[in-house]
Length: 512
Ligand code: XMP
Image (cartoon, rainbow, N blue to C red; front, side):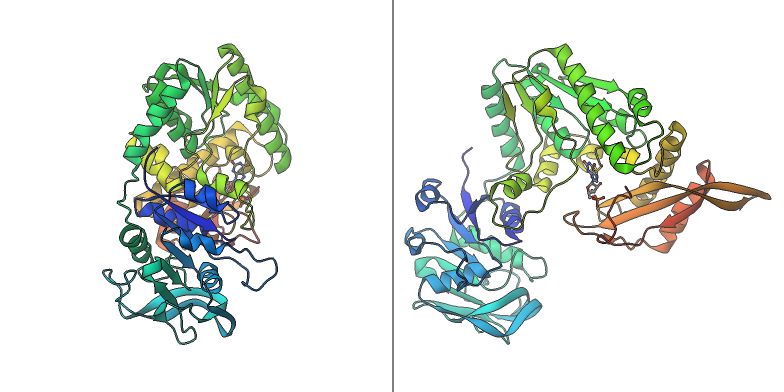
């Protein structure tokens, strides 16, 4: 694919992915590379610019990541952020010292608008930036000038335009930095000269032609879960190779209300071979009487593979297997410089059980928001494009205790009402995950003049960016009231609703 490239050189910062996403939001393609990447390799990629990320170290730590000063002679614009700024200063002969007063959080910053980074964007002379550092640049290298300062940080930004070197002690990639996105945009467009040639329409076009020439007349197989990634991968492959693609959608009967049909509808007329395996009875019989969460997960994972395998065998040998790997998985497993945050619980192991020659990962360079944009570009239904994450084991881990058809139905109905009301009140996009849980607890209620003894449904809704930590969503009481009243009135066997107000940690998002 031919488009301009900016390299995000990773020095172990927690925000490396965020920097890359911000660059992509400017319509500029970028890749995250380890600081250990040899200079020759970086050069051969012909980047329009390089961004040094932050990192947890001090430049004086023995084990801190360093970089050869030759990188500054490549005539490629460089922006150093936080540790990256300190490293730039240190490597070019400036001085880095421990802060007398560390800065953390939003910090009033005074900007010099004659800098190309700060002029031309909507940025007041003084505005908050996001700081997080215990060292600071006490003397900038010769030839550099200071372009921003705070009360405790005399060189909050500095630059040497002749050398095309720019540095900011704060984090422009974090939303709390006022106009941070504009600063990144100024760097990649005005300093590096990028034109903004990275679009999902362009990506779709190139990916489709690349897939076509790779696959030729080969057979392709895809395990479709109905999740965003596998759905978008399916839509892309369907456009590229149509009937050579077979998608197997294993419906374990533990999807949300109507979800199996929605997935089927979305792909029914896409030109590919779509196989929906209705395996509800098979899954439920294996799950009968099982209430231990880990056992449920294991049974579902194994059964999933077995069903997929049975269907794949009918198709015979395939040439390619498609996987919906996305860029954050690649960064997290590949670089090893940032603390590894494990993506967990995936129903994995599929490649082992199918005979195929090669794996195709058409989304491997895309972030989640780009995957959604691509899905929209490909005309995929908004129901699939904007689907919130849904665990592989489905409702099985939202029904506490053993699973029965009756309980699945109760939960599907309650969950449907909750989702409907959040959408109705415009809260569905700002809350990252929300669902109902059928507790195994029954309690006394009164309906009309009669005593009831029915289930308690718990509502769970969280805001989170990484799903590793989460806050409970502050849903307005009147919305909760409507949801509760509708569920107890419309869903049989439920007489009590509770709202889960725990954060993660110590709780998890799912109840099992
Ligand atoms: P927890 O409950 O661990 O969930 O806080 C974090 C995120 O992971 C999802 N999750 C799963 N996803 N298979 C999946 O594909 C699973 O077994 C599974 N368990 C949890 C959960 O929905 C949340 O988004």
